[in-house]
Image (tube, rainbow, N blue to C red):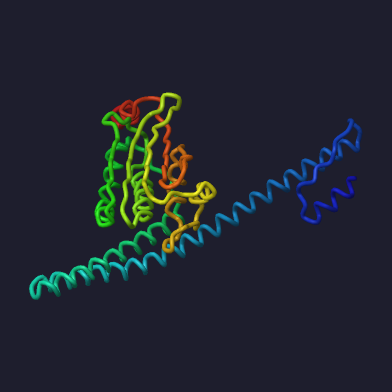
Length: 294
């Protein structure tokens, strides 16, 4: 039995475990063999994590280089468009209107490419959150303001129904805004023919969490894909990298929360973000950690 186990380990099978019967020398030998295999398993797992970290680091450096070059080009194009706009404010009204419309479309595409670059960079960075007192109501309003123009162009109404007494949390406001912006952008892009987005919030009495819901009237997500949408590079859209919701999921989980698509019949998507409530009011936490109280 011991010889057979050793042969399997030599072939790379580290799932081998020998039975330990009794307290004689063979039993002690089997126990020692099992401990050795367990250490080999741990070593293999550590090596795999190191390899993944090295690949991630290389990808991050490559992403930074590509993003820098792409952004430089996009910024140059953006500035050129602004200069063209400024020089054609006078002249034939119809031609000017057509030119402005075309330039606006170009700028929209530039903004879309910038979002793709940002998603690519965020996926490589995985920066831990910088926790501080965060007003999630204000953060959500800022994210809404960033998609309002695109939503209005598509005939989409956004209803923000957050209670005035929404509690503050310890969170990274910039990351939270990215999280909400990704959810809203997905909802807007899913409704090219118009629709509604409703954002609500509550603290369910049975849970120690703040719950934010982003409900839209779009085509919805089939039950079979509701977990997959949070996987990197999974996308049901013709454009995009499929990174937005993967980044969003990581941000939420880094804050100790969770994000999921609520059960329900399509059409319509109900995206739920749950974030843990602090044990003490955030104002008390801020006072306790301020320099004056140190």
